[in-house]
Amino acid sequence: MIELTGWEPLGISVDWAAIEAELGVPLPADYKELYEVFGGGVFSDSVYFLGRDEGVSFDFLTQWRVSPAVDQDSKFGEVSAVDPYAAYAPGGKGLVEWGSTEWADEYCWLIDAERPGDYPVLARAHDVGGWHRYDMSTSEFLYRVLADADFQPFGIAQYDLGTTFTPGSGDDE
Image (cartoon, rainbow, N blue to C red; front, top):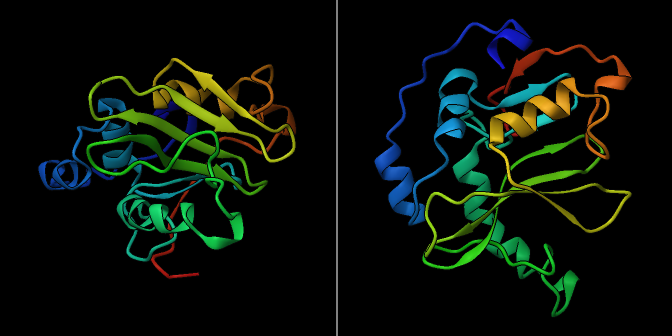
């Protein structure tokens, strides 16, 4: 991803033990590397990556903390916002969002506290419906989204947006 974007690694220092203790599971090693290199921000002006941000917009932990409340929001009635799954809660099984797009696509891991280390990527396109499962790393999925025009329905390379990265602004927009 560094080579693809030409990004200079930030080398963010992260207290992974504290984050993972709050989540109740370890996070994928490649995601942690992406987080330390990029922080939170936007790839190719359209793919949002949750890492660390001074504001809440791109902050992984802040977004995860509100996900159970959003999942149980009354506007969805009895149905989970991530149906047929649930938002992940410590010790359970569910989705944790790590990315999205300006088109409302969602990128998550399916985390099962009883199976630490197994993190399939589940992605849902706003206009295609249903979740797609990818048994690949976060880095590989993100790379394919940005660079593989044939990676449908999520690949954006055919739109010629370039492969850039813009860090989160640090504001709460």
